Length: 362
Image 1 (tube, helix red, strand yellow):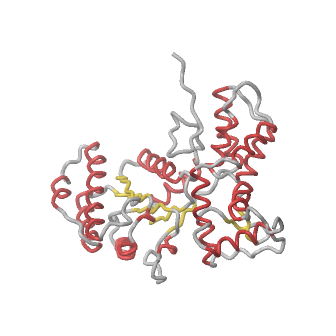
Image 2 (tube, rainbow, N blue to C red):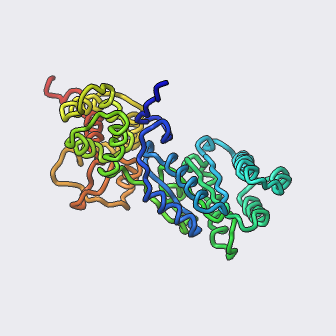
Image 3 (cartoon, rainbow, N blue to C red):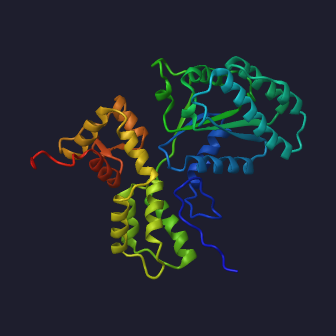
């Protein structure tokens, strides 16, 4: 029976048994150490940069290094329209389900009655819940990762973060939860809808970066080792240059390049694949164009960056620049001016806002 070859994944979490992957070993070690230090961490990065896969691997690495940790995963993606009561009810059910999975695997059943009986109805009762939960867990350290945190309703977010802050600032040596990771597109400061001082100013920010050229080389090297088809050296350098290591773009171009396994992948093959991705429509580009159309000011700002030589100074405190950085559209150039994150995005931005006619035809 032939062994099925792995693939380059662009549609969701990656699995090393099915997909070619970038291990992100150093980044995982960094996050695991922050969890062990008891940090409350904000992990933010644009969509389709591998956040979900990353924190799953980090939790696996955490447990493998020390089984005193009890990791659970929450997801707020579908919570945006929930009332406070419905939100906390759902939160309690999810925590119970996650804890039972972990603790039953460890043959720890003393918590079951407590988890069945306790009701979380607001941020205050959530604090009491975690205090009692800590008594049950004893020397075990609860670690919570919350994915898609942006989905939390604005009427809930402030009190929820205040509650986490109160727990973090408690003097308990083994507080519960011991460490919290908030995963989302936006940073916490951008979730302060009332523009007040952040209730989560104890945060330790962790920005998940794009792939380096070395990581891209590792990713494509796995394919070459498995299949035997090589990439000409300029291909890898050009791929990274055009994508700036953005994970979706790297994997999508790799998909295009490897559909034919008959010869070494040359620069001509890359140029053809590059042209194909520039002219295709996919979910990633739909997200990009949706984000850059969110505010009329974005069009002026982006087209000025694309079209003029004078340059716009990079100022992360500017509301519009900050939001476009969050969406992965802008970055700071080495000269201190704004740059579009990668040449492929720049092409898409110009295509999105460029008029079909420039007026001269009339």
